[in-house]
Amino acid sequence: MNNLLKILLGAAFAVAVAFYANSIVGNNPHGGFLVLAALFGAYMAMNIGANDVANNVGPAYGAGAISMGGVILIAAIFEAMGALVAGGDVVGTIKKGIIAPAAFGGDPMLFVYAMSAALLAAALWLNLATWLKAPVSTTHSIVGGVLGGGIAAGGFAIVSWGTMGKIAASWVISPVLGGLIAAAFLYIIKSQILYKEDKLAAAKKVVPILVAIMTAAFLTYLTLKGLKHVWKDLSSMFSFLPQTKKPTFGVALTIGAIGGIVSFLWLKPRIAKRVVAMDNSRDALNMLFTVPLVFAAALLSFAHGANDVANAVGPLAAVNDALMHMEISHKASIPLWVMVTGGIGISIGLALFGPRLIKTVGSEITELDQMRAFSIMMAAAITVVIASQLGLPVSSTHIAVGAVFGVGFLREWLDSKKMDEKQKELQAEMQKLEALKAELNDPALTDPAKKLELIEAHKAQKKKVKRIKKALRENYVKRGMVKKIIAAWIITVPAAAVLSAIIFYIIKGVAA
Image 1 (cartoon, rainbow, N blue to C red):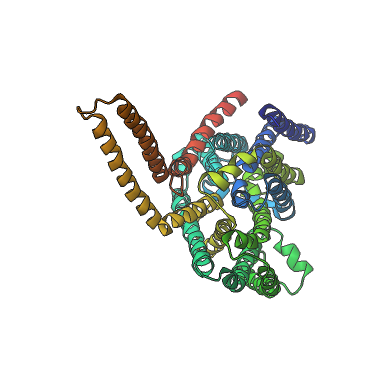
Image 2: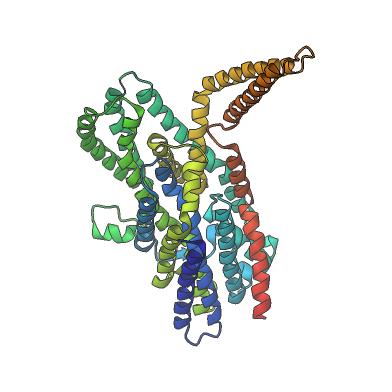
């Protein structure tokens, strides 16, 4: 499918959402702003699908566990399910409490302008980041959009700088935690399985434990992040569940532990039976992690759809609420059409434009196989669980990409001896090159045939030295990608904020 057709299909979805919004505005004198916000919301949802979802499925694709078509299908279905089934019916009108609704001086239209600007600014920044192959946080994008729109409407004094400080802290906390946890699990796999003489016997013992830990982590993660919006309904249906507004950490941990134990008891005999017919090789052992990766991709996508759909529909729901009641609320109900816009928009954006970032996360930062991808997915779930309990601000995008960095840097560290050998080889070959050069420059060299032979040998030696230098430069983690991604993370909030402020003034000027 060519790019023009993709753009046309995406535009068709956004226009369809705008037409529906237009059909429900009735005689509202400011109904045009709902249509505009609906257009921006659909565009934002597609950009979330194009950029953010890659973090959930990129490692599984890069490891070769699932094809590109497979990861898109799995993620599209489970993202939409998460958004529509567990996305919630109420959303905070101001993301993360960055600014107070009172900052708009009771003028709902100023609020509408700011939220509309935030949506478009965040979407534009995500679009640019996707084009640049930089996975960035959609939460930080919308935070920047709200920040810029709020400042444009009420000045710098209305910003909660303490909240912004916590968000800035997540730029460091998220990738470091994700990287350390992913590296730790990969080290366990290497030390307890791959470095053993009888890898199959080691795998028979260790793999069921690792998959059980993964199951427990994902069920805990899914309970905390994916079911919190529908917990009241679930607890009313099943009386044995705690009758609370949302699942507590203890309940989530208990559900995870039960799931982990069940999976261990179910897997242990099956893996023992399977390894009997396997080779005692890394490639064969990698296959044991394929099915867990498929489930991990599905569960991460469901939780992401449930948790992050608010990045697309939150400001749109806030605009809808403000226009319908002509007042600014701290909380806004999410109409079904708004939630459908978010859920389907994420899936459409993923299907049309997601492969670009899926390839970046899966294969262009460091080389992945099933074991490395398994470690990354484990880190994604466990880091969110730990951060939720400790109250640390984290970004799922930064966690996943940080985990990719972590497994790559661990490989470099473990294979440092090979790099030392390569450096010694380079020095030896450089000496040979210098010797050939000295022979060529020797005034006593008068034999044309001998000179031609030395020239060819010198050319061949230069090529050999270049190959070794290139191998030394191309470490397990591509440094250029690391620098580009970190730079994109740092400028996400300010870039979205500046864009939002500009768009706010344009909308306000046109409305006047």
